[in-house]
Length: 541
Image 1 (cartoon, rainbow, N blue to C red):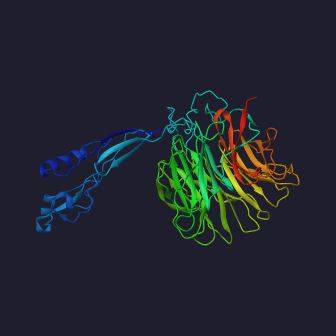
Image 2 (image 1 turned 135 degrees about the vertical axis):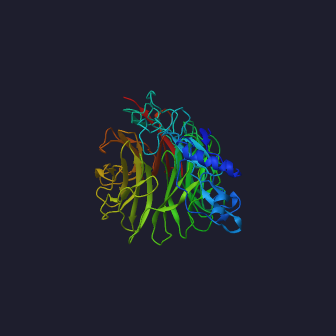
Image 3 (image 1 turned 60 degrees about the horizontal axis):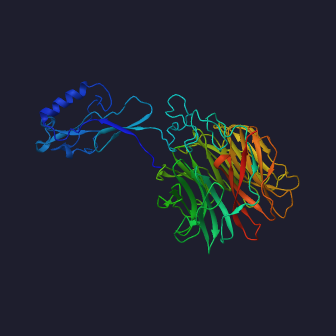
């Protein structure tokens, strides 16, 4: 659905072309008019400008928000050469409608004031989301929708099992647990193998599932799925230019998808972004975000409620460091790439992020070929640092591939460790100022075996963890699901999700219809590496 903007305009008048007598009268009037919407406030006239004959001779004359005029009488009094006048600054146009819920601005071309509603209704449910950094419904938040990505969530809604916070009490599907629904997962990757998952999101009517397959090189594909997981049509390539492309983290923001990836059409890997409509059709040309020498890879994508944020690892300075780029809801870059980290001796790799109330939480894994540790840092949504980096592991083991979610008022970070005892999924909780609320701890119990590849879904008062584990020795890894409370303690029985021989790995979970959790993952049960889809069902006690 189109994004609508509401606008009302008042404002100042151009003074170009007025006679000297009229101009004098205007100046007198400007000095006595009190400040209102679009009113001019009296200011001291600045130093004389260069000689002029008409208003257009004056520097900045096209900016009618900072008006100037050619004062011929003042020029004569000052003995200006060639009987010219002097450029005189008039008071600027001040736009203020005394409404905290509008963004007030003056249009330089016309001198008119504009007053745009400061918040949006992206999901079209009649409730606006809050200003960035403010809680829904609090004073001057200018919006009370707790989830402006879903028309099913709004103040006063009735809580049902559907993967959203319907009544805006901060909790998703109050008290619900999740059980597997499909004994036989659905294969999505057709005849393309090997293939691996990239990202999955639910729009309210269908899933968009992105994965990377190998067709004489890496190729990102998109498959639109019905609520049951069945394909709604043939899979399509996301990128049509020649050159390997991979990745595909994807988010739904209420009326469109954003998707990002790494692409080497220019020679080495660079980061790209585009927008898709609710049917998966591309509505924006591929937008290149990185332009430096060296690889830009391992792309992460987040949504703040008003902007997209893309983060990646980039070797433009030798060792890998993390960079990020802000984009508008329409996919236009805001400023340039922002460097988030400074590599010292080892590179910074594998960034994952989530948007908090007024911040961005980024987890990553600095390290070398043998050892990695997990770091986490909080940034303001303009990407300036909000906290110092927090080390969540000590670097003596190989901790890798963090994932991050925002859970009501805190960040939850999970990762797996390839050499610790146990070789489990580990997690920690950090607040928006970078303080550790729950110290790092093992979340799974694989015994002498291994847990790997965590995916998290936040439910407000608890977190759903989906991961792979080979404890059953079923000729590889199987997927499991486990509910954790705010302190990262198990709050329900563990559920085994897959049962076939060979590996089921790399799960990516998203909330879907009727409280289902859709899971995209790689599975080798048919001999080759393919991408499959399965579901967990919501059960209310």
